[in-house]
Amino acid sequence: MFSYILRTSSSDAAKIGCGKPRPSPEEPAPPESPFEPDADEQLLTRMAQMMEDMRLDIVGRFEKIVSDTVKQEVTAALGPLDAKITSHGETITDLECAADDHSERTTSLDATVASLTARADSLARHCEDLEGRSRMNNIRLVGIPEGLEGARATEFLPTLDRAHRIPRPKPGDGGPPRAFIVRVTSFHQRNEILCKAGAITPLIHNGKRISVFPDCTSAVAKMRAAFTTVKKDLCSCPGVKFGLFYPAVLRITLPDGRVQRFEDHSAWTLLNPHPDCTLLLLMNRARQPCQAL
Image (tube, rainbow, N blue to C red; front, top):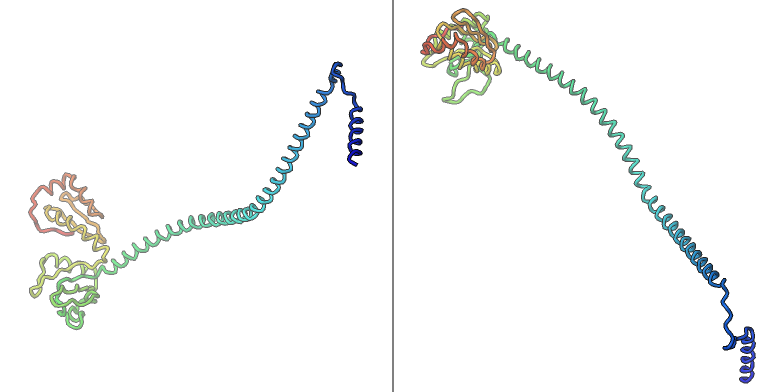
């Protein structure tokens, strides 16, 4: 069996060897075909081209797979964002419309508020003026001891239209008495009382000093009180007549007959450069009896 395999192998080898005669060492080797290198190069080129095509195909497929995957993920992620952006855009549009409407309303309200403010100021001035004029017949008496009028003030002052103390709590022992508000029947009677009280300064009753003032509102009283220093200066000027008219208008008559009016006490400084006034102020500064209009 083993010899048979050897024989078979020898015969196969002989057959294989006979397929192509082996050149003898003495014979020169046949020249190589000139076409074989080109064939190899073409083969290599085709293989390289095929590999490049395969690479490009693989890369393209991979990129397509990655692109599709990323696109799906991005699309899935951007869907809610698009909805939110759309919702926010609608909200912003509504807010812009509301802001425009509010701006128009605010502009209209500003004009309305300005008009109402002007009307309120005008009404306040009118109310102040009406209240002040309603007190034109009133006189304020300061210094009358508490209880001196008895149970009824009108019986204490029977010739007057109305009399009462200011509505505030009764002061304790040693406290200043409350002022008396007296209403006379006519404006001329009120002016006569004020003039006589000013001529008898100081006015003493039972050892107590009593002051007589016109009854004014708090705002008018503050404006009139601002002219106190000015009136003191005018009292030092001989030949100068002055008067404080309602609500707080200072009228000054110079010795030459010229009349000047001032509604602001600070305007008194404008008189200092005036030659006549400068002369008057530099003259006798001793206090002399004032002459009121």
